[in-house]
Length: 139
Image (cartoon, rainbow, N blue to C red; front, side, top):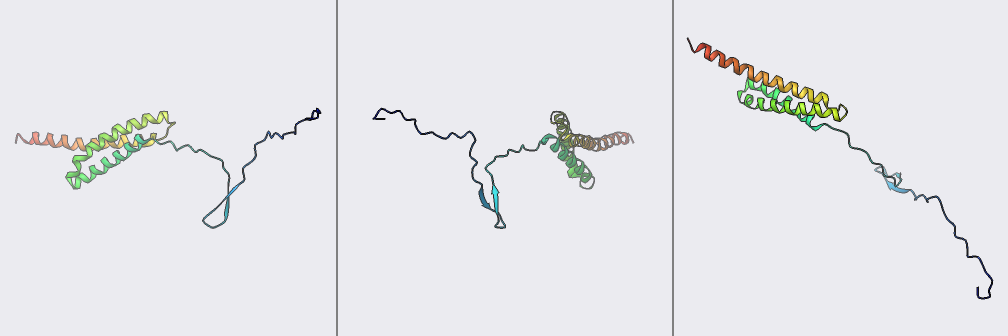
């Protein structure tokens, strides 16, 4: 440039395509290399209905403790509480299933049905017992 002639600057290559990263080789348990590409795949967690599951668990627990209460009466004192929890969580889970696309509706329904059966199996013998005690009190 000192002599006054104009020279063009050297051309610079411009890449419009990204350069692919080399494939990394990671050993597997068998010792064979496995191709590992640096792509990230995001998996959504499966949709669950926890309240419906809890309703089913409480409903089954209350129902089974009710039948154990016929053999060991101590268990019968806890079954009504689990029945009420099964009803509450079952109804809540069944209504949440509408927003979750039906996930857990069956669990919720079984939870509150078993809760109602548990309460019926707890209340009916108690009412009959009180009725017979007052009916026989007159004799």
